[in-house]
Amino acid sequence: MRYFGRRAKAAKKKHVPAPLLGNYFGTYAPKKYFIEGEGGNQYSAASVRAFLKQSCKRAGIKKRITQRTLRHSFATHLMENGVGIRHIQELLGHAKPETTLIYTHIAQKDLLSIRSPLDLAVNKFLNADKKQENFMLSGNFKG
Image 1: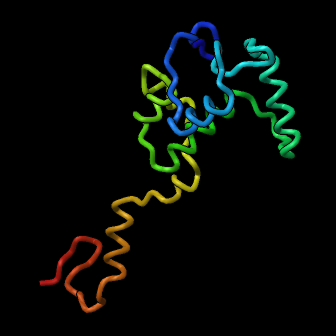
Image 2: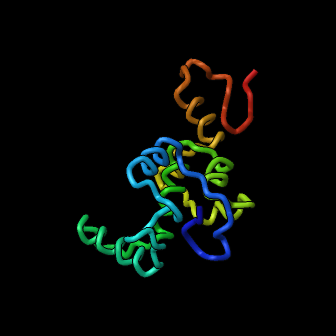
């Protein structure tokens, strides 16, 4: 079975979650290509772009969406849901993790949720019982 995509990468293995793949094969039963057009022919890149554009229009999406956008979004959503970079790398078929990182971006909410260990220590101190008068932030200790 041939893979869909750039010719240089056509021989590279791609991974699809098994339940989705089983459902797809059960429904469409492709013979030669993973995704077949009318008469079992290969979809052209132009056909895929046209289908995606039409789907976005039907969904009311005004932003320009490409096949790469979908791939990037897939990888980003996996990462946001806690899937490790190594697993995402394998799913996307990348040889190096650096390539996978190009497809993913860190969500702003994730960046904002990162707490500095120093902030945590200072907050713990500030919220501690105020009876501890022997400790001062300057490092001077009363004896």
